[in-house]
Image (cartoon, rainbow, N blue to C red):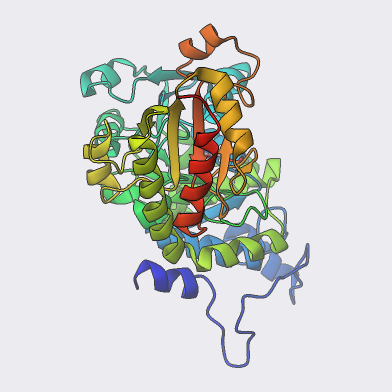
Length: 422
Ligand SMILES: *Cc1c(COP(=O)(O)O)cnc(C)c1O
């Protein structure tokens, strides 16, 4: 099946007389005929037994996303941050390290550089343009994973997934890719060698700004028996001695994540959240091409304006990341355009406050056009000098193009730009 079809039909197959729409199974628990049956579930958790880590509605969404990414299994989480966290904790213990491209979401940088450090996990950041030899040099004997982001939020730098995958595999560790901005519609990282994919489903997947969520998807391709991952190949004492690779084969990673991390930490979405996410997923494959189309038009519009200093959008032929976008994203960007307005912070704020259609909000990849000014919002504690050092220009705006008619979006930009000095 192609993506449009998977979006509508994967995950839930109604049987004779079943509801045509995936039902909301609003129950924390499940009844079984015998103690023996429940006992067997502890050995082979293939049915739902408790909603802290499994629920039929969430399960259907997990299967749909796994199918869209081309993976063997998936696990939903209550946020994108939780998905990123669990994807790493499933591999790293205190005393281990991971390597991460520096072109990743700010929340990921904070999680890896500050919070995981408090728990004894070190993150070594490498430039996204680092050579394979430079990435190679960042490895230590305790490195357990490499992490990158297909289309970085908000820098819009495209990850050279094959390069990072080669470096990771040469050291016997998996590559995890945050595929939030691309979605499986624009890029399927497993086809380029990634082993694990994570998403903030809060963004394009949900698409309607209804609820936060995340997901981890397992390609099933990584060989956990290579000697570097004893937790996968030796008995898990917390789980009556199960050996993940032996009992679960290709699904070892994703089942370990569920049976260790979700069991112990419990960041599992409610059935109702999964139901809403599913509605977003049903139209994902028809929405993404329109984001791409509108995003490109907005990028082109900003590019020809004399009030704009620079535009970053990998879908533009002149963009620094266009060649990588051609390889990994079909030559496209998504709906998000990053621009620097002339006149710094004052003009950025004036432009943003003059927009009438585009919403000024702390969100991105929404169905409605929205804008964010990092210098006065997410990074407001920094001085202009500190902002520049952090790669954030005081005049930088993240413009997240929505699905309104492009003429209305451009008219809104035009009237707002007219209010600022050139
Ligand atoms: C928003 C975002 C996250 C974090 O997701 P939440 O759902 O907000 O927790 C992670 N990665 C990327 C690329 C994001 O845009």
